[in-house]
Image 1 (tube, rainbow, N blue to C red):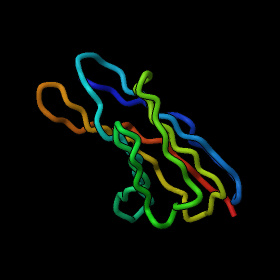
Image 2 (image 1 turned 45 degrees about the vertical axis):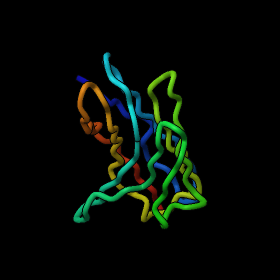
Image 3 (image 1 turned 90 degrees about the horizontal axis):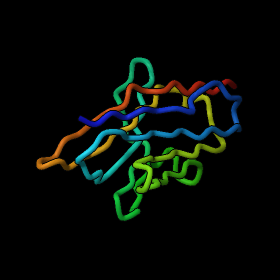
Image 4 (image 1 turned 60 degrees about the vertical axis):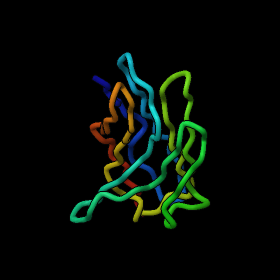
Length: 118
């Protein structure tokens, strides 16, 4: 069993920055891709950014140039640095991990709220 624990959300003014962290705990697994998704009220969950275990990244068009995803494989942790935040970035942000432990599984974190005020 793998648990994902997110931290770093909060309230920030437009133009500000936040850094989200997501740490995976457990044993007997290998983490492949990790990513951040977000869901605003009344909207579907959407991909924000993803990173493979080799470091290849993928971003939603709406965050390119403002957000940076990174990971520390030694700590099984993924980060999302968010700069130049906008009110439309307000959402609950979820960490996702694709894990191999004999077979492939997908795990989600509990979510962390990011609120950007005008």
